[in-house]
Length: 311
Image 1 (cartoon, rainbow, N blue to C red):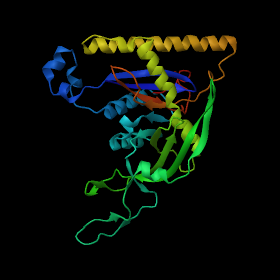
Image 2 (cartoon, rainbow, N blue to C red):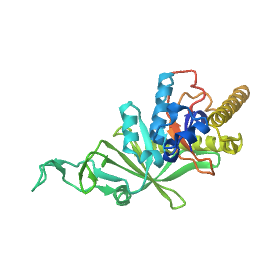
Image 3 (tube, one colour):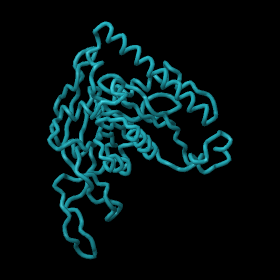
Image 4 (tube, rainbow, N blue to C red):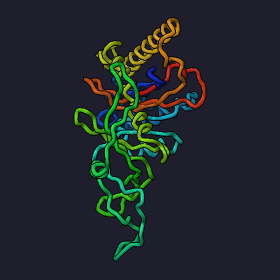
């Protein structure tokens, strides 16, 4: 599995990181890793979220500026990953499973009763799906696509995520207050998200931020299918990463040619936009599986501003 990070501005994605995730059966077998050429420093158990955070740190140190980090539920379900983004001062919107437990934004800690020694919440946590089921869902158009407006039904409310310390029966205390957002697609499928965008953010802005990851997902499919990322059949650490690097370089060069063509013809109204997003997502498709990171809006101009990234 690859953890991927893509920068994107407007509709211009550029992959900037592809790192191999080693499962426990590999990190627990140093001889196997040595035979595949895995550097000794990499033979350590790390979650996909930890790898993604390390890659974000690398970009920030570059320095690359971006405005929003997006990720799918394989990352968003991790309280440690969400906390890592917030600790870095990043704005984020991530997918979550429908059974993610949350409290109402008005939850309070009250004095303990009986044998309990610590304050406890004055309400029980509920699943995200149940919280949003009782709200009104509104049709939102987030942008125009090649076949017309892109729209779905959305609902959102402020909550506090149940990701604090464990207090009883494996229940967690309330954490930070964030947005809980639901998406109801025309197919009938529902998706759920958390975001630390400001409390006064409109539903349309929330929807547009969440759906910005689509551009990165399409880029990753192009990497896999058209540029050969998914065709690698080697068995070495070095070989895989060299192959991944070449596909990323090819993708960036093709984006350069596309933007140059738009400038010369005067088309491509988005080409000059300085907006961008950073995304960490789980793209669909066949093996090898890759996990991506999304892009956000750059705060300042930088060498990559014309080629933003998203996952």
